[in-house]
Image (cartoon, rainbow, N blue to C red):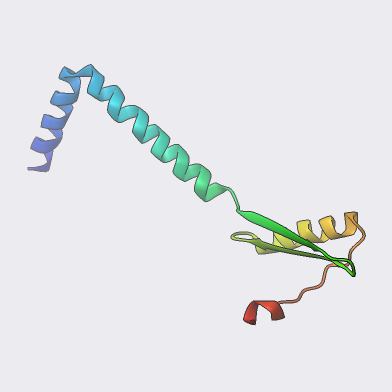
Length: 91
């Protein structure tokens, strides 16, 4: 039953070459988009500047340890000390 359905689909695509390209390109972009979405990490960095202090915060969806090292480098480059504080998350 499945092989009959696959043969019918293959025959209809071979007979209509425009449909082949209308199927091929969206599938390519679908898989390319999924690959990009799942291989890149989403990082965010926030800065709060007040008269008294400068506060930086950040979040990463993947590779938290790698982001922590990168965030410490950002803090060191502008002369701030990175602290590992998660107390604000509970509030």
